[in-house]
Amino acid sequence: MNHSLLSADRGTHVKIVVVALLAALTVVIAGVSAHVSDPANMTAAVKANGPVVKAGAPAVYSNREGAATR
Image (cartoon, rainbow, N blue to C red; front, side, top):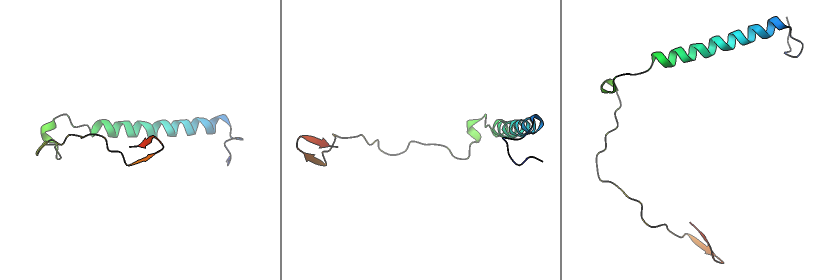
């Protein structure tokens, strides 16, 4: 058994690549299966209630020798 990747043989590197690909494939499959196709079935929906708040004019917090910090 090799305890260093620098001295590992080709078989060890292939095993590492295979395990990494299987892990990535598992994450992709889990993400695709968790996809929600119907937005009506979503448990958390975004609703726009209340007034719209608009940004005002920029405020000057300090002024030092002509360089304003906003």
